[in-house]
Amino acid sequence: MSDIIRRDPRAEWIARNRLHPLHAAMQPVQHSWMGPNGVIRKNPHGIGFIGPNGIKRIDRSGAQQGGASKRSAAVEVQLPLHQVPAPAFYISVVPDMVGGRLSSHDRDLLGLAHQLAGKDGAVLAVVFGEHKENAFATAGVDRLLVLEGEEFSGYAPEQRVQGLRAVDNQFSPRHWLLPDSRSGGGELGRRFAAALGERPATRVWQVKDQACIGRAGAGLQDLARPVARLILAAVECAEPVSETRHEVLPVELSTAVARSLSRIEDLGAVAVDPAAIPMAEAEFIFSGGNGVKDWALFHRTAEALGATEGASRVAVDDGFMARDRQVGASGTWVTARVYVAVGISGAIQHLQGIGACDKVVAINLDPGCDMIKRADLSVIGESAEILQALIAAVEAYRNEARRDAA
Image (cartoon, rainbow, N blue to C red; front, side):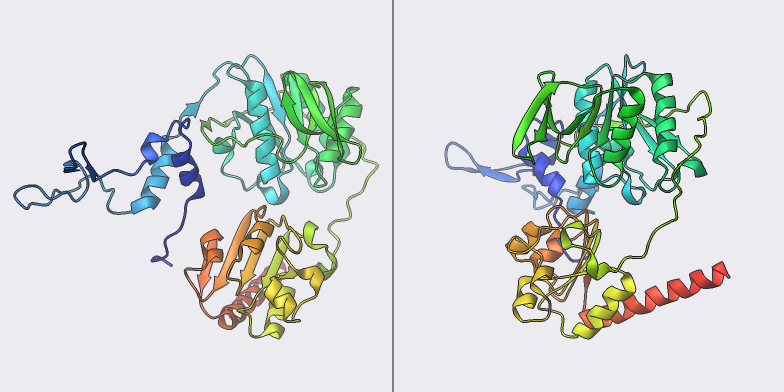
């Protein structure tokens, strides 16, 4: 693992973008170049430069010990801090926080809020219950309000509307932004709009020139209207924040949220067969390719993990998986939060199909394949041995959880 050269897509993007404040820091140091007279000139300040006496200069900056990874870590620290000591107004964002973390849709929403806030406003994120997110600063959150309590846990839209109304009374945000998604933001936003008596702008994919542009006519037409106070935004409504880090100052409500007499009872999660979940809607996909030799073991691993099964085109063509399980540009484009690729080398069509996945885990024998370069976590080794160890780890974890519960 330590010998594998991993790409940093964000650092590469900064190096290409001349307008980025860290563009100059990401440029490689040029050690030698040809002058106008054809003479090769050398940079005496370059790392490893050998002087005229044959003495190699010593690098005391530590840049040689860490390479690109250290440079990328330094970039994260050097991002300029965006501060709003006394905000003139607030832009409130209610992210879905599926699994307790910000999704790509939530980050797009925060990018849109940052555009509406400008220099004088502050972005206020309202989160229900406990969360696992530690990257609010780089996502564009200036103020963070966490509404904790059992009344907000599970499916409780009526109580959450009460919490949002309390936030609206105290902070009076100029705009409310919620994701127009099936993960809860679409329903909560419409309930909240009815409680406020506001007409929301729905399926908004762009806010420009004081106008909201949303999808209409089954997604075939665009509908423009003046910027509404409550906006339900679609995916890719704006570029996520990437050039600044923010304070994430905690704020609290001055009054307690009134409990509403709920007419809805949450009976908890219902067990669903992962094989019955459509590929385009699956959150956890366990996908196999040409490198899988024991398909019975592959199916047992997917069942132990509770994941939806997928496959590459080669595995489908060989008859190991059904055609509706094919992932890629020639199959199904997936948006899973976790995508595990077992024995998949990473053809360009397959990489296109998993481009919207949040986290990619690759299990492969070839450390130089394209899937390893794309993955967030790579495991190099024989797939059968790794899958057996994975099943054993899952069973041990569940047995320990049962003992704790008893």
